[in-house]
Image (tube, rainbow, N blue to C red; front, side):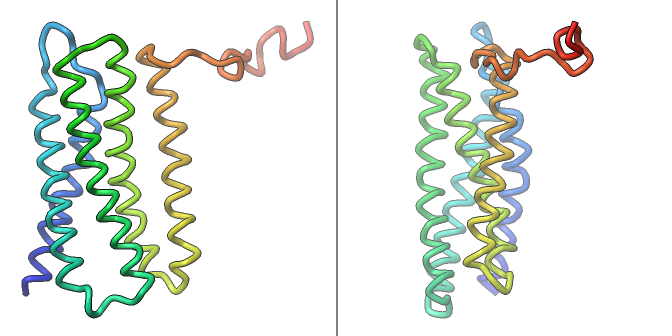
Length: 178
């Protein structure tokens, strides 16, 4: 019974964490911090996720296979780093030191993409070949996350547009040889 409650609390923290994570990506406005509540909710949800994950690992440890022990220990370490990165994002948002916005988004991105990695690893762990599917799940989430965060950073003006981004569309004069 305890295990089912822990799983339920963990899952019920993770899904809202994904919603709150989207809300906290935008660096707060200098005049007012409308997303402070979302940042606090995001941090609180990650605390609950971490606590329930550790409790589940302790509860299940004797029955876990070696690969699962390794994967869950890695997830617990990742959760700890997520907590640190969210705390650092809060400090940056409060300090507003030069260049803080890019670092803020990087910290939030790390925590957010880590949530997605956690969700992607669970079905991979339960697959017939977890040694194959766990790295595939992690690489897939990191690839998609990197593409999306770079687009977002360019959109809000904290990442420079590269030569690749500046290429004309296929219908332009340059592409048609004119």
